Length: 245
Image (cartoon, rainbow, N blue to C red; front, side):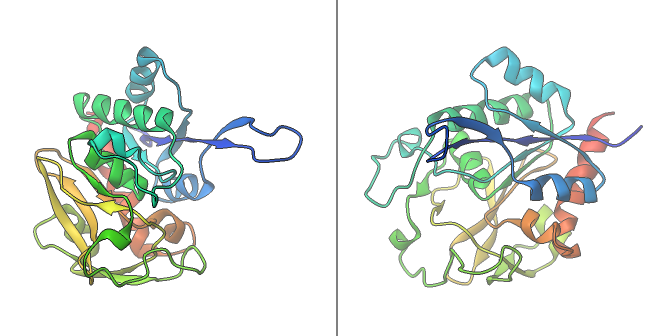
């Protein structure tokens, strides 16, 4: 049957200096590629495009999808005005991600949303976000750690009976690099994991075989010999392979 192809949603890097200020580059962080390969998948990076036919073809070409991290999600997409805590947004990326997600659902492709990926997954189905964690009453944990990518930042409790629990068990130590978080969970999704201060760290879609979002960056840990976090990618690869029929 061969290894499944995993589509990795790319990003746009806007040059701030050098010879070509303002120049845009399509890219994806290497840790997503490394983690996919280690898990037994074939990585294929999706450059961001605005043509619907091409986006559909991108999704049709692969067996599973990783919605990667990146810029803040435009709050206008969840009917909120941007506050002064809102970071840089790129509407092209938001619209591309949502189109990829919608086609993936239509075609029954497994989805793994990571960091921004969990957030846009929630927004795509009508959920909302906290524009900054400081807006969450009782949030006290440092969710944007000042340390190496694979450093264990804080604990996460996982709900029993969820796909994430089947992968990682009841409690796990994760890294943490985010200032926004899921607020109102979209219809059809359940919360699968929370930090000790109540910040949502995981969601999944109830009526799909594998549509899972996590707030941390498992690829940064899996690419650096963390076998526990590699299990998340192995499970995506497993469902993607089964999806091929």
